Image (cartoon, rainbow, N blue to C red):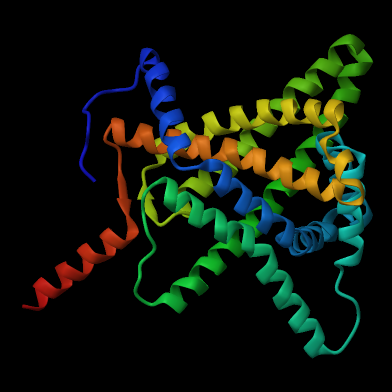
Length: 309
């Protein structure tokens, strides 16, 4: 990709970067993209929860993990959404049966769990104006699904790290509380906020780096992921306040909890796509590495062809 500008980032460039990002973000119709991802997130939720809970339960136990997930969802989306997710967790477990039924059940869970990342990849490709390699369509589909499953495992691993660090922080808070009681609460809040930003930034960096069909430099990825994680953290607090005060799911009756989950995922995707747009604008403006994988493959094929001559 050609470099549009040979300049270095300065804080005075930030307003124009945000302006260009907002214009590009609005042009790509993020509301439709986020609605699509939210729909597949609902379909992926049972498989995603089962795989993650199974991974973490070997260390912390199933009840503790389910309780922690329930608490986090209740704090973010409200009690009704947390109850629905809790019901999904209990009903999605693979029961005892024949080995054929077990294999089919595991396959269905994996296929379902990867759906949201597969469609998130399609949305990011649209935002960054790249396309998947049209050759080897079925093989490419399997690779994309495998990569999506990798992100399911990454989320489980990051949650594991987050749970361990949170447990250590609470232990440290108890120790600090013995000496400086008034400071212990603020210490825990700030520490958990910093760790949350770090974990979310790492997840977004991996998504921007490996999910779309593009080769992009780490410098752009890290800047974009940090910006996105800050916006995501702010948005999470705003959404929690909005769901707590407005209760938008009440008007939908029994389906209200599912609607709340759809709205939360959709709004969160809007923030994610804004961060992706910022990363793309930043990369183009300052001339960092940004090469569609299909172009890189075509270039490699041409080089091999020329060398054979």
